[in-house]
Image (cartoon, rainbow, N blue to C red; front, side, top):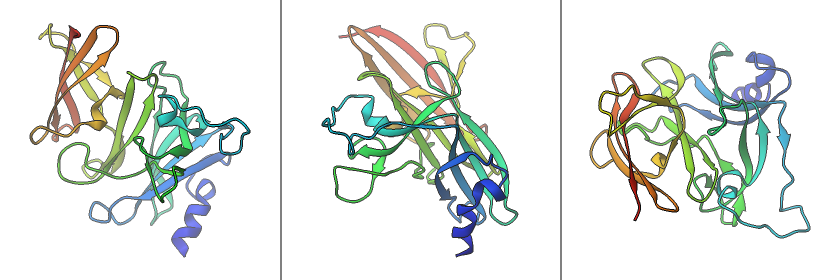
Length: 240
């Protein structure tokens, strides 16, 4: 009961802005830490009209698979210490293409997309903060945000609770050009295709993204648990 009251009063007791819209909360698995809650929130958000309430039928599109009916605005992910009622750290979620301080989080979305929807209806409220094992260490302490810019550009960003840092972190992908072994890697907070892949062996992924007409990108990535980052290469080729 006290925990429910705390969540209801989050903006007041946790140092969030009074205008904050708390979208979702999720307790960190107790095996990682018993007094930690991840909070997904927005400030000065707008709300898109929902096709469930509209006269026009829903027109499916590739971006709709990750946006649906959505909140949009400056998006934050905070880690809350429930024993002291304080925010430990807060991350900003940027737009994957422009880097601007805005993002869309669905509040109703179609089943079958990357966000999990409970129940049996075709549409429903997604579980955005759904913990899974995304870094391959066997521990379900990570979750993903998704953004489909088009039918061939599916981005994901991986977040999670770091026991080493006692913080919520955005797992970066340090990617260099495969054709330039000595090149400086680019640190990416969003990457195409990764969240849909399974590791081929512990801490190792390899996948391709096709961009019509005629271009493919081949990723090869390892996870470095000592640094809590992903490192890898990107190769470009003609397709088919």
